[in-house]
Amino acid sequence: MDATLNKRIMVALDVQGREEALVLAKALQGSGCWLKVGMELYAYTGPAMIQELKEMEFPIFLDLKLHDIPTTVERAIRGYVQYGVDMINVHCSGGYEMMARAADAVRETGSKLKSVPKVIGVTVLTSMSENQFRQEMGVQRKLSEHVVELAKLAEKAGLDGVVASAKEARELRQNTEPSFLIVTPGIRPAWSEVQDQARVLTPHEALEAGSSYLVVGRPITRAEDPRQALERLWIL
Image 1: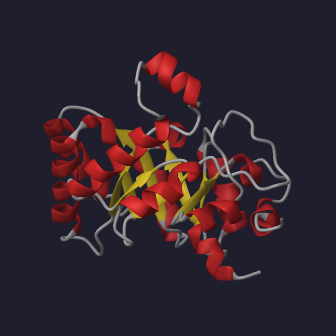
Image 2: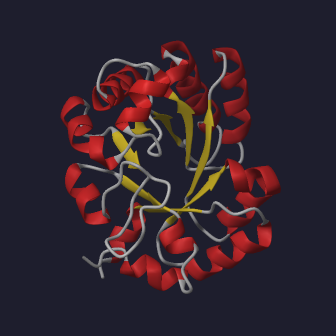
C-alpha cells in the first residue's frame, strides 16, 4: 500500500456528535488522510470540533457550501478561515462576484495565519442524476457541460478548484489549468454499495480521470474497522 495515496483521501465525518467523530478520528490518526467536516457535524459541534481534529494533525476540509449574497459570504468566510482549516468551499452558482470576493477574503485572512487555505467551488451535487438535473432544475444543456462552465467561471474568479463528480473529472482536467484542484465526492470502492449517490466511480477510476482529492464517507465511517476500510479502498 502506497501511503501517499491516503493523502488524497478526504474522509467525510458525517456524524452527529463529538464522541462519534473522535472515535473515527482516532482510528484514522496517522494514516495521512484528510477529514471533511460538513454541515451535519458542524451543526452539532461547531468550531471546537475543528480545533480538536487539528490538534490530532489532520488536514481539514470545512464543507459548508456557502451560498449567499457576495457581502455575506465574504464576511462569513473570513470567520471560518480563522479556525485554521486547510480547505473551504462555496457554491459556484452564487456567481462570479461572490466567488471572487470569497477567494480574496480567504487569501487576505489566511495570510495573517500559519497558512492560506484552499477555496473551492461546488458545481453540481453528486447525488443528482442527469434526468433530475434537466427535469427538476430546468437546465437544458448537458449536466457535464454545465459543470465545466461553472468550473471555468470559478477558475476565472480565482478559486483554487471545484467539487464535482469524478465522471466529469476528465473533461474538467482538459478545460482548466493543471494546478486547478478537482475534489470528487461520490467515490465508492468496488466492494461497496452506491447508496444515495448517482454519479460515482471507484478510487482508481477517479484518479485516472484526473481527480486531485477523493471524498469517501460511509464505506469507511460505517465499516467495522475504519482504518482497514481506508487501506482496502485501493483493492480492485
